[in-house]
Image (cartoon, rainbow, N blue to C red):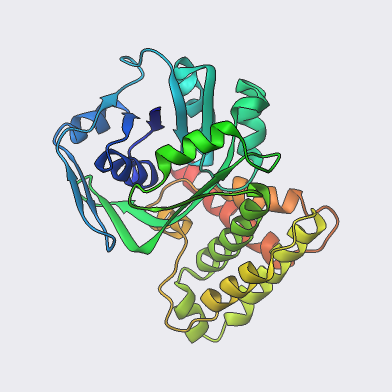
Length: 305
């Protein structure tokens, strides 16, 4: 199968690099500046094994031709509209779109543009970032990628895409209930992003400051919203979240905090804002505080730009 990956930043570059190293037919769709950097090679440093790919296949929006079997989208939510216009020429009658964004709003946007039948559900759990030289730094052992039919259950196209993504050097599996798993991931990332951005600190530092109850309060609010929407986190997900969010040695901090620290845009509306919209009348004071904090940051950033 021919796979087009939008972007070769942290997420797209990591998973695309692993797929290329495993011999899969992958092409990166990148901006000209990124193409110039990648012409010198794609480098990944990772506890799971380093990679150096001297000449990854690249196209830009100006050189993109033909359609692809799979188009993987892993941009930030605030770049989605532009991303949709960029990938549109690559989407044919049989193309399947695999989005790896946070929350759920992106699914509605992609389904409205390309048709519900072309869009799978998906998510990843990975801590990556570009280093100062344009390489990709992977910070821990986690490199999870999951996808599934939004309606649930197996399908022939899932089998085919699973064969392409499987055994490629990262933790991949097809989900029979991807919507439930996406909710569980959303609960965790909304909690972690809200806590670490409010406190400007990693989870372990928040606990050390005596504010671990704030993180757990955020988790309780997000879990309650998920439950109200018919997707209460399962026991395994609840235990995993509590184990990670009560670890006094944890270095975990959301990528959203890294975005703030570099003065960049954030996904407040897609992560906290969308969660609050689905809360209805349920009180969620800590989540609302975190969202207001991030909106205030965005307003100041816009004023200073």
